Length: 113
Image (cartoon, rainbow, N blue to C red):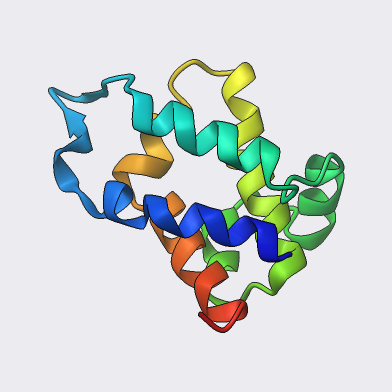
């Protein structure tokens, strides 16, 4: 659990509203580093799709963030990071609408940082 605290260093990146430009997200080293850290820190849950469908069959996962415990946050970040393999623009939305940022804020709160 403590290994995922390394993700907090990306909060300023996601707070920066200029990360998205001209209607699309420009690929940069920072998002690549974030995704690499997500994979390396042990926060991913490989059963994220099954768990999310059980927790919220409507697919409105963003609403889960505000009350999420650590395990739910693991599932949410797994969904938003891993689903990129199936949709090339999937990272754009959680960056633009601040979903990644809200997940990191909530994670910081849950871990008492």
